[in-house]
Length: 355
Image 1 (cartoon, rainbow, N blue to C red):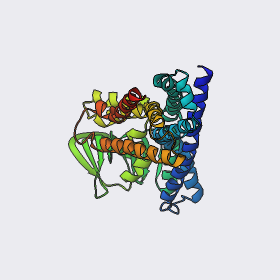
Image 2: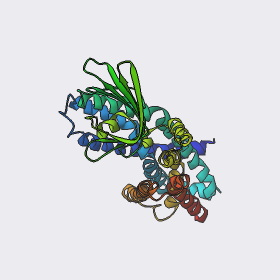
Image 3: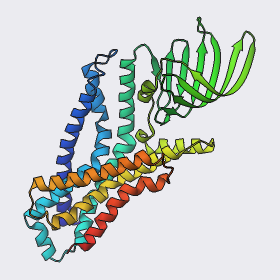
């Protein structure tokens, strides 16, 4: 990497760092405001809420990184353009693709940073925050475990597997206890779905019931389970597919496919996670052609406005696809890559047209 490359990389990363600091401050503020209704429930205090916000910052940083990279690159490169430094570089014989190579180095560093956040820091911290919140809010219900949730509700002990959809969990073990904590029955459901009336709909349910010295087995297509353990609680204690690291999502996909179950949602979450991690590379490249065009002499406000518009379009496209990927039964791998692919194609097309 030449001195010129290092200079451009510093300019881009400096702008991204400043923008991410602002975005994370706003994100933390909105997240804290969202905790106000929960403060005072059980033993959940203001300090618990603040700890919850801090533990969720790595996840927020990863989610906001593509938008922050785009706006930060516009600011950093725009500063070089306003000082005519990019013009001097072009006059010295550097092509747009040569400048794009230097910008891409900054993008690769951001991708590496995002991968560390997405795969090592964000998931365990977010999971810990959710579990601590659940423990504080539902002090009369205990749970333990990582990934899977063990929950006790009076005479029921429930072991629920990872969340695979909205109100849908990959499986549930139900242990029924008597007044003297003697085990009365053990049941296993292939899937567990939360109903609107607060009950659970257990599908493909098999049960072993203990009567004295006898064990009576039974199977049924489904069972309705009444419990104070709500889907809202398990949604805190367990982890949704979109919040799992890639390795855990891959294990979930293999498990579902091996058992003949629908794996589209975790498959989409897996590839969407990879695509969103790669997105900052194309975000910083997309900023380059803009600073050679109409934004070359624009102020910081104009570049921020353009970055926000492009970032919001990327976010809306991503949310629209995430909402419809499973509903419309499209190819989850293809749909997961659409927002990032559109951004990458736009960046390469505009760089090629830069004169």
